[in-house]
Structures are given as C-alpha cells and as structure tokens.
Length: 429
Image (cartoon, rainbow, N blue to C red; front, side, top):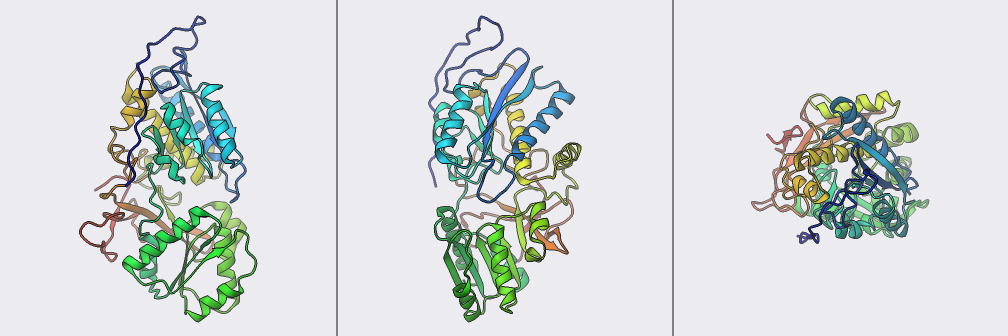
C-alpha cells in the first residue's frame, strides 16, 4: 500500500489587491484564494490534445464548461461567483511539456484550481501536490496518488498489478477455458496491466494458456502470435493494449480460421470506435467505471450530462464525462468548504466526503480513503458488449449496471465468488 503524501501547510493572511479584483494572491501552497474575484472563481486545465491513441482528450474541457454553465445558470454560480474555465492548455502528451503547462496554470494564469487534467503522462503531479493546488482529472496515471489534493474521477489510486477480476468474470461467463494475454513490451503501463491480468487468472482461473507481451505499438507481423494461439487452443483474449491493436489481433485470428469466445478490451468504449472499426470489434467486451451512456436510467447526473452534450451537438465521450465529474466534485468541495473557502479548505472538505457519486454517475467514492490502496474496496465495473454494431450493457440490471466484487484488491476472507457478484447502482446498497 502506498503511503499517503502530506502537503506542506502554511497559514497566510488574506491580502486585498489594490484594484479590488483579486480577493487573494495566495501563497502558492494551497492556503489562499488565487483566481477568486468578486464575481468569479477561475480554474484552468491541461490535456494531451495530441495523443498516441487518438482519443478526444480535449472533450474534458467541454465537460467542465458544460457543468459550470449549468451551475452558473441554475444556481447563480457558487456563493454568488460564476465558475470560469479561463485556461485550456495542451501538453501534447509530453512529460516535460506537462510540467511546463501545470506550472503555467499556477504561476501565470493564477487559477484557483487545476481542472481538468487529461493526459498520457502526468509528470506535473509532484509540483501540484507540493503546491497544494486542488487538482482534478482523469485517473489513468499512477501519479494521481501523489498527494491528498489530487482527485481522479474514479478515485486517486490505481493498482496496476492487483488481480484483475472482471476479465476473469467475463471469461467464466462465456465458458472460456484457455485465455491469452497480450501487451506492449515497450510500454511500462501495458506491462503492469498484463501482470494484473495474469494475477487475476492465476487467482481465480482459468489459467493463462498463452501470453505475448512483447508486441510493439503499430505491429504488423502476427505470424508467431497466431501460431501460439493455435498451438495452445486459445479461446479467449484479454489485452493491455489500445483497441486498434486488439481489433488487429482479433481480425488476424478470424482470418486464420480460429474462433474465440470473447475478446476483452481495456480501451475503446467510444462511439468513433464503432464507426471506425465496425465488424472488427463485434462481440468485444468493454468495461466502464461510470453508468453507461446507453443506460442512463436512474442516474440524474448522467441524464444531465447527455442533455448537455446534445445541446452542444457533441458526442458523449469518457473524457468529456471525466471533466463533468471533476467539475461536480470541485463544486461539492467549494460548497462544503463554506463561503470563506480557500484552496486548503476545499481540499480538506472533499477529503471528508464519503459518498460521492457525481449525482449517480460513478460508483460511490469515499474520499477519506480513496487516495491510497483500499483492502476494503468494492471492485465495481459496468460491462458492455458490442452487439450488431452497438454497445449493449450486459450482466447488470436496469438502473443497476455495476457488477461488483467485494474486497477486489485484497481478499481478506478468500477470493470473491465470481458466480455471485453484487449488482448495484452508483450508490452502495
């Protein structure tokens, strides 16, 4: 379990600026009110607009802006101040540029909070943690657990090598007996994921029949891989690669006359995937950490998000929803901190929230615990399958899409019963 980082705290008095615009410049250590004026609360974010998987990371800005506009219009902002997204920076998916851009948000744009952060490489996390800046984003990076002021949309800790249970659950549901695992040998995140995938099958079964984690991004020659699949009677594929790589493997398997019971893809739950890859992903299974776009029933937050995207003629995306969820948590933190909020008070207030669901969008988060590994965590995922060119929620129930296993990370009382998952909605039942 990773130890929880502690931000350096400093008591700083509020200083009025001569122009009467800024309420406080702050100390740069999370105890002031930079970006707060008589009329506004200013935030800014950074995304990797250019990214290797070609996903719409910039949609996160749309999600934040849409939520802010809703709060400004319906509630008059927060404490009479409009929420404003004043900076939309691009790190081009580069570590050095990510550091530059997050520093610029704090030191040049002087924002009160950093949101959203949606990037492949969150190299600026340490700086933001040290500064104590309330920071919100899409948690696909281990760096989100760097400090108590960093808040991911699905909690701030990811255990990449813990036993992955949902791919095993799918394998057992479809009757697979010989699973294979694939990953990129030149990507640390992919290798860590493959370890978690392997641990899942070793813990719960069936055992892994074949594994190839030496593939390179953009591979073209799969002859050795297909030979290994055939020789080991592989009937199920679980990968730690992008959806294009998964589709290419599935197509090569099909062309070789080999039938698979299922393919589980960790990435690719997006409308453009269906448009671009079509038949190549038919039958694929995907997981979602949020109520699926296709089944918003019972989730007021998801219905609001979908309406906001439709109003903007914008296709809903995971990154756009992450921005919306980030903005929801930020606003809840502001309100909980009180009218005399500071950056530190907002961080502290959020870290006392035990039942955050973004109004029914995500599985319940307990921010008194969600910055570190949790032995008591419930592993909850909504599962979908591509059927006739559409994403269809499976294994859950209407209004209760999440398939949950208690103590997913550390099973104190033995492995969970895969035949009897807990089916629930966003809130614990």
